[in-house]
Length: 263
Length: 310
Image (cartoon, rainbow over all chains, first blue to last red; front, side, top):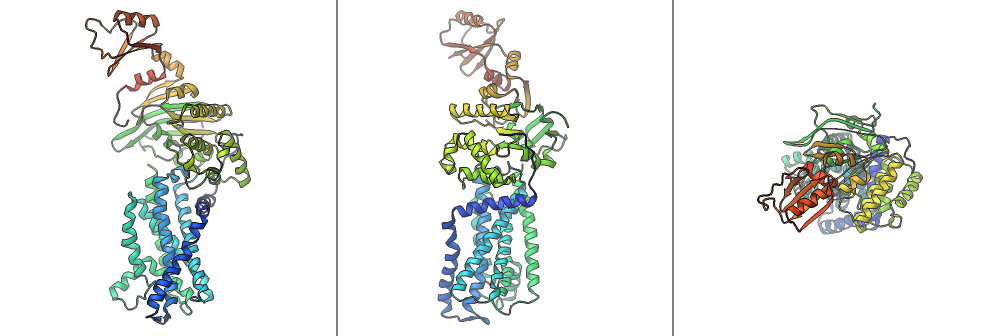
């Protein structure tokens, strides 16, 4: 071995990519068990809600109910996968397996690790969105050619819930406490984001509340890509919300995790 | 920039009221093996963590830290790029197999794929793990995991190797293997900084050591010289005694030094016959005379009773 070589720190994007690559390798090494659920989930949802409700409700507002529902669960699917990755997944790597401690022995900063992981959550979000889209394409529910764009929104959604979940994880010291996050925060979001029923007929106060939660904005964006005639300038406002949300929760996550890892 | 590999001055670290490191000073020469010894809670691990930026020292008084010309506050990544770090607790990636652990880690240093594969083959061979390349981490024994952790720390061909208790909990075979490997690395010019509480380990591989207790440096020097300067050559252990069992006989005699711990009496002397005659004068039967070792020095310096962190 030659121990007199020159040393250099990889560029920031190489470091972040190497972290992303670690997650990708782990994910793909369990490819079979990881590849089915994203396809199965939307099938169950569309069957369960679509066939059950769909028998009574043909249209939701002006949209076919199955189309309405499908364009909603493209986002909830992304939300849940990113949230699982950056709560239970992150917590196990942080506290049980000590994978992060191991990575900190290499020329990586805590920021590199968090950003790499959040980008992976975004990637998973995009993949899960794509899986839902493929199912809905096959069943002829979504036919709009722009719908492929919803994958990008799935990525944004994954990043949003990645940073939010990572921040939650940074101050969670008992893995069971994530139950509060999932049932107390994500489940209400699932229902009051306009993913499964429209918000227009809700009481004014609930409508206001719905506008504050992140899922509402990505659902609005995704639906514009899946349902013809929904593109309008207002979508820029939804996008702006996403950017600001990511910046704030991302900053909190960076601070929180760094504080937890560097003593 | 000095010619030292590592130099530390006025290093302090407190956790609330607990002073983990208390005004620590030491220097390590290039290609030297330097050992930090001390009981649990002496501040060894904290010191190691500070060196690679995992822990931050107290801001006042301002510590002087120089690791090949770099300070961990500004240059933690630079320091880690030329260092190999073996933490106290193995933290291998349990979701990857042996080879992928090294491969993924090589990416963190920006190594190219073909370079990495060549180094990985070499390192698996060096640490005698070639046959385990495809094995999952959980299926490895403790000794194999330790060797893999060391192999991982060598993937960037470091000039500085930081090892926190590299052989704790391992069987003698693996311990000797690791010692041999560390000697080989040292001969190749790698600076080795390690912590241990095995006195034999320090004796076997360390050129110089410091003994720490409660965050402070108690002794510093070459192991053999430290023993000569601070400890008698022989020690007699007398069991079943508590020091009060010998009325009329004073333990305070010229040429010997006595110490009691629970029911064992330790009698130190530079002359073996002095100990024999002492034993005969007390008509002792259950005793054992041996050469004093580093462990005796360690216990002399850090005390025999347990502290609250042990």
